[in-house]
Length: 579
Image 1 (cartoon, rainbow, N blue to C red):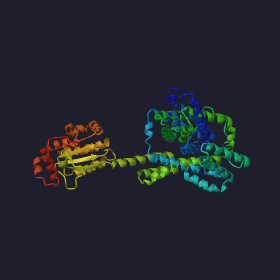
Image 2: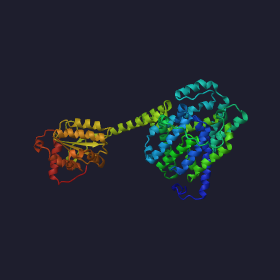
Image 3: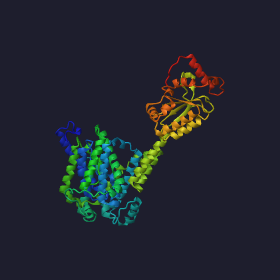
Image 4: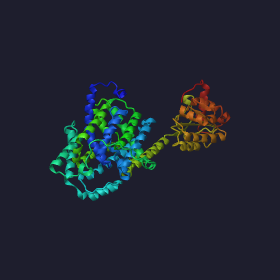
């Protein structure tokens, strides 16, 4: 393990720093582990198992020095949906399948691709998740009785409204005390473990002053066992794989995104560099092993990773120490966890939801009133009212359509004329209506010629050359790329023009578009001799192909520019002036 480059220049005194950081993170992670597990619809100990096992494996096999893995709020809606629809056993299978997908993504080096997830999509579903987590804790905050969790958001809200008359004043008092601690302690004593204090102090108050008046972990789940569960491989069948694969895919993608975002944050705080594909493999292995010991899906946790760094962590050993610390707490203090009121965990999750809601970024994108705003709102609403799987898929689709539309609008086709003031160049200004040469047409094409702009390109150019000149010169220096659809439309245009007896010249074409034309055979159809590095050279060749006598009797308004250009050629030495 010490041969790992993440331990480069690691010295014995660094062990103490990692130990203290690991204990600090463990104190933060323990209440979150139980809270996220309960919010996901499973027993609190499953969150603890996840923190121990996933935290250890990611620390040993991941691609970041400082990554802390475990259950996170981002997974709550998708895990709760799986539990409500299929049960806890199938949740383990979904997590196992997600682990396989993450390993495959890492092996195929897809780590960098995940970074291209549109921000409007990530902010949209993150804000939606925050709303679901926050509203999901209202019942515990007020101590409502008989509340049944449902799949649909609006059904859960109606259930809360119907059960609101059953408010438990003791639960409300416990939750308010915890909320005040979460707000006040960071302001007056930021170094204290606020999450642990917000859990312990309300618990002590409820036990000492009004015992058995609020629902606790013991009364709701029967307490927390001491020790890890035995190894258990879930029963996986082809039917279950097909049924759970969509959820597993979302878990894998969401886990990959959050892990890499957390690693990027760690890089920014420390100046180190993580290995994205190795990180995905580490997260994948963690999610393969964790379900076999009863744990739920895990990913890199940004807040816990940042706490790890601020606590002085030096290497992945801090993550190992965090897991060992939580394991010791489980072995020694598990019986006492039965007294923790659910009302004391509700404000913790509500504050987590508020912090992850990205309200400033949400409002910033919304104010843009652009395609990104539509993607943001759509993803947010689908996350809240449908499910995260549909939200991510539709959000990505809308983002791609919006991007394609914007890129398609970047393509410009402008007609230009020779410019006698600058030698063998063309005028940078578009030709006005009625000003054209009947024998030689020059067009500047700017932007990517791809499937989103190809039809517009062909229609624009077809309309512009309806008078059928003898020579068509296409200036393509500003065409960044051509895809198969763009090549097809260009080929159709050129074939139609050549069938009418015209000659096509192309100048300044870049490497990628040129390679595409060569592979498709269009390069040979146009003729290698009709490709020129500069427009001036193409113009000289084009003038040899037109009927010079017709130029003498030309009455078009473009004649003055054309004639001046001819004269400038006769009085100046030939030179190749770049476009």
